[in-house]
Length: 151
Image 1 (spheres, one colour):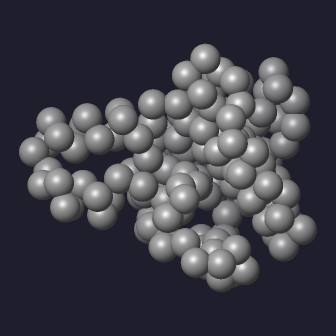
Image 2: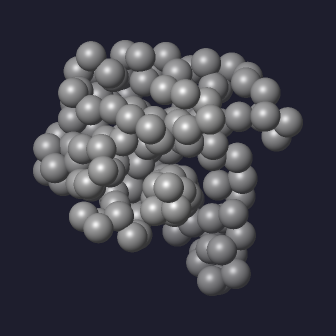
Image 3: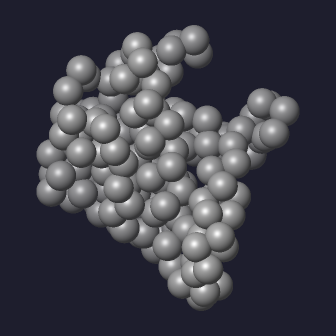
């Protein structure tokens, strides 16, 4: 993966799975086959890495995904903190279990942008908590899809 083009390894066609890795949950989104839009898929409650990976592998198979976009939680100044290291470690552990490219995508502000949209849509707080992770995954994936289309 190169820093100037994190999406270089993504195949030219096929669905892409987007992941927003949190400490308690993993938000999951999927692109359509034409890669125009990202849709929220589900929120995985994190348990052990093996079980989390098995669910992701299941979603890859169910959706015939050809790549994964993993949100990279950079600090606001662009530097890498402990959450980035944890995300990179997750990707390193997942990579041997799947035969797909994993690309990182800057996820700064994705959760706050999605939360703001839900507040504007007048979604109740308990309902927002249920959907914020998969919507954030969808937001992250949509950003990568938009970049892929412009390349």
